[in-house]
Length: 324
Length: 63
Length: 220
Image (cartoon, chains in turn orange, cyan, brown):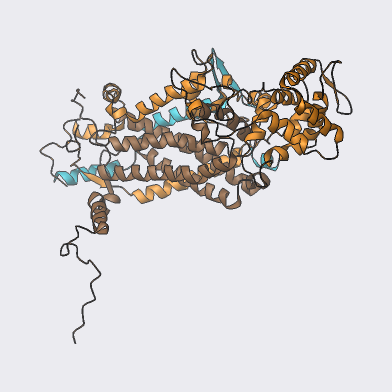
């Protein structure tokens, strides 16, 4: 339909657009104020590494097992690949490897960042500095033996009254001293600042501490309680009983069904599907069939019922109609 | 805490969730979507003010 | 006593001066030609504009005004303010509910425009700018959620990073980088959304509100 054919040459009724806008703004302000007074907004306090290390020092998702996995390179972040490291290629879809192609833009050596460097900053602890030196001087094979043994031992670990970690006897090298010191540092609140400002005084990039916490179990535990996990359609949800992001319904839907739900490449696959659908959404005017549905299913008869009653639904600008 | 006390309805407890097979949606989101659909239908069916003005304009245009 | 006429401004009456090389005159004439004042701000609408569905466009604009207004107040005191004071939390709540209402009204507006096939008659760009506004509003909201500096922000940023990283965007759009996310949220995305909305509105004014289907026509 060309622009000319769809130009209205009929009657215009007075319509005050500026007044309409002012009324709309007034109504919106009133609505938001009423909703605010009734319901306020959520503000669940953030988790801290100190809390994590105190609430879950050992056990599944615990601080010490997670710190150990950062040291031995088996944590989620250590094995992630780009943009943090080269440990993996990251996700792909067929021949598309954009995660790998865009490279390591935010390098994190997890052993150094989360264990070695923070421990080096601990003052007045010659035993710790000696343990660190021993660990770093040892060959990689020996380091792995120590960390593997300690990982297994941690499955039966408990925390003593004085905060120290008790594990079955074994050959763990300097690792227990390192982990105990790191736990004490974390519980004192010192690890937060150490991770955040390791490069410079002013910092607004929370990637390092956040990735560390995400490798552990505290964030996930809180998220599950608030129905925020992926399998809980959490992408759409807000903490508490607040409405969330209902517009993400289709985005999160794909993650719930095969082949996406069982795939290691779920994210890139879902994004590809949603990109195609989003493009199609923008291009609806050009898609045969989809653009004709409004003609076939006459919701428009309701919208324009007054016009159809007055004109009988005939040609838009019948010849008898005088131009205004 | 002050913020919680400041609201009349406390929405800070985890939401109730509706489950159906693999479908899971929080009640607040379902409500939001339900209200959206209701408002859409109402917008279609409720009469819009100004009919007399529009009829007068049509009559004027025909002259 | 005769009075000397006022001096003419440079350029003056464009019908008498050659203006082929004046960008200013060309820009002005293009703008005024496309949207003369009575078209930019008409005081009448076609008589077929007779349904409540038509208010959802302006309702969406109104919600956006409240979002930006409350956002400006939140920006005045910085990102930590709303955690520390009741007034700050009040404006955060206004901002959050305005966002919910923005998407609410925008989706209803979108439904209405789809069922009217409002892209007809050379109005495809109006549809496109509207659809792109919706799509851009989603990451605009995401950057807001990850800028909250609370548990929700911690969770959303560490989850969303996987999606960004999977398509390579994570290399230069880091959801766990608060400074970056906050900057995009309070400056870059608002500029994009407002620019799109302004373009969308100007297109509506230019082409007018789409007329009704003719009922006997069955072919596309």
